[in-house]
Length: 465
Image (cartoon, rainbow, N blue to C red; front, top):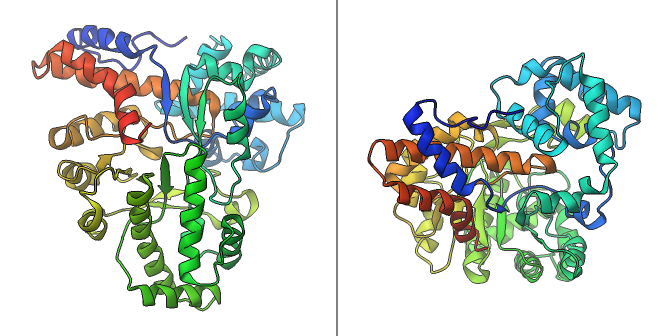
């Protein structure tokens, strides 16, 4: 069982303050404005099949460290569909036998919180305890109280944003919203990356599907732009409040319309150069900002990750299986064309995340400290860990304060880790604020207001929820 003061400051005076601040936010509802849970999970409400399929196989945070220790992803069930009980139990044993790999990592915090808080597990995973823990979790999963909808309510989730392809009909979202017995709010997020990258394999076919979904002729550049605009309207009609973009960089250099049309024609024919494809994508990111000013969708940026770094793994197991690696990213000059045009546009929101923490104090905080549209996204992916979150607050707060940040995002496909991730953030922020109170830089009533605002006010404001 986790210690009640876990992640709170060690100094007794600060810890006492942090306890009071954490108590003010501990039981607040969860707002999840950016994540990757499949909405069909909640629509179908089928029991989770087994412990490994729930807590091991789909979570690349979990599988990547096991892979680094020499465990094949196939042994963990990645990319294999439903597992037999034997295969599931074997994957679970691999996790438990190598529990020491997670010492000091946020993954251990999330897993321990899920095991103890959801399934009542109080025994440390190990080779000796693996089978007993598997049986304990499996027994729970056979009960109605552990179906997805029941857990959604137990987790106190009020808003859950998914990530969706622009061609999706969003039928699962529509069915959930039409269900009078469904108390939650599950909203789609427009994710057009593959349709903005002409260099990606299969791009002409993807654009053709986009045209079919939008009932628009994408044979020319103007029709392609209209198709994107139409699909954004479709998403807004189904509750979307944001559009998410994840590219290697965030350059927004404009092209003249004729140049964009020429590159578009060449890309459809498979004749665009790599430089032309990059120029087109950067121009289209600027166009996405223009569309956000028109239709109100929040523009979120998740750049600076080299996707599919190990090509053999990507080819065998697919994307999002643990082999994406961060790279350097630059914002100040990259976003200047966008911000010169739209940085003071009324109602435009731009939330910028990064996996490169060197830009927090040098670029993102100063940008958010001037432009009304810019919010600094909280630590994400490789940085969503206790010490990194503390560094983030130290780097950003002095220039941009707390109000110009996004609120926590869990960014997860692992449904049962959602409450643990949000709890970690609340504990860390309570500690950060407690230090400011202990140093007489904040009064405690201000710290309580700020702690609550970081949980409820900031995500609602930044993501227009």
